Length: 274
Ligand code: LIP
Figure (cartoon, rainbow, N blue to C red):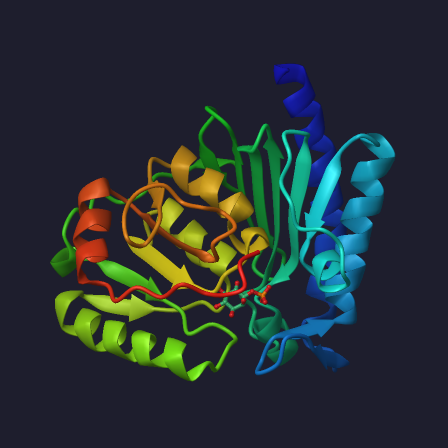
């Protein structure tokens, strides 16, 4: 099994680096943008080409593997996780950033086997940041081991807070209430506009906690393993186990910080689920 994981990882990493050139070379080009689910949920030709490059390359080498890709699902493909090896792909996480030429967008690629994460790769080709993890083997940034911070209290924390792409009135009431609660309780709030890159900030100890309502399984699939392998926690925003299809999660440097935040949050349950 270990040899298989190594082979899966090597093939995937090579494809991610190839696909990354498409994002890097086009960051400052004019882009044709389509609106997906309304508001500011955009998709570009690059999103689709990156996803196709990854699926074609992986299925050629591993024909029995399954896929959950953001743009394939948007095109009507199934979004269901079986026990079989399944690659979960966000081809350009931070698409709005990419459209604007704001260099915080990345490829997020996770491999799940028996519904558990085995490989996580998050690559921002604009800034040459490559975050990787294999289960039980640690988390890395450009080959250097990373670890979450040791922050245990909200009053010592830098928190990541995203508005997301929807402009749903009910969701914004909850966001506004949580924002007003958390600003005075924390040292600062940040937002990169990419769930995957936000998760890598927690994994490398640059931020201490990040939660979001409205993400999809492809936003978080690689980041889950990278945060866990860096020593962090990955839970539901109300505490307890994450339902990966629920479109809500929280990751943090420590359980005590996560627990303190959960107690302060007004909860929101996105529909539909993934
Ligand atoms: C993005 C997420 C981000 C969220 C945005 C958007 P995309 O993914 O990574 O966390 O706040 O609304 O969903 O659409 O750029 O792949």
